[in-house]
Image (cartoon, rainbow, N blue to C red; front, side, top):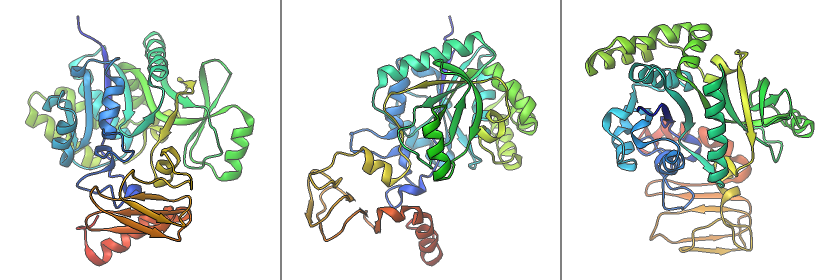
Length: 357
């Protein structure tokens, strides 16, 4: 009997906010930024493996990273890696995976997840995902997972629930509010962080594409007619060159009236910035997040230091700084200014081209 549960891992991003550690040739999903001994994508695969057999995983990534995915996830076959010719945000990514699965199994039930989340309590997390899969299987529902906010964070999208039940119909989405609005959301108690994890039946999301993103449906549904790998590649090249770049949140979830959220607490973080790495790292008595060996700090407080193995760093007199050293780039900046990393990248690229990006 065919197992209808599938997991789609979205792993195509470059992770520019983790520059200079994350690069075009080796983006953050393939790095062990937290020092756990495993990459983000490996953690993600192992997290869902108790729920989904290895043969029912799909990874959507840029064609440049196909070999990296197979290196980090040797359990997968080449045909389980869907290669995007160009990044177009999450809606085209999910459309590619959806129509590929519908061609293989029209009864597919899908879990869609980013490749780079931190989950501390994985058993509770899997229980919640299982509840979502069961609910989506029995209802015409698109599910997402909401996280109880612990602070007025302006880096996350928010979901407003219509009641306090564990599974609630979504009242509205709000994308990355300002600080004042985030504080209001926190006090209100009706708003949860949007984790970016989705669960639905393949048939349900296909109907949503037809209704809310008909141009994406028209382009990507051609995958089902492609009868050779070459024909499918031609369809995908055409679809990505012509489709609009848009997130699944803006394109479908914010418009649909059958969106539900399962709220929970399981130690979740979208590890998207050096600041979030600092927050979740073990710190010394002076609140510094540093490697166990190789760092000599003098009058340094509340800073994060990342250096290559077998390298020595001597740092003196810095407070609340990010220090990241690689073989060819050294970045030192205040933690409060890490939003300028994209500006740093643009400047380096302008003067030196792509070799350090």
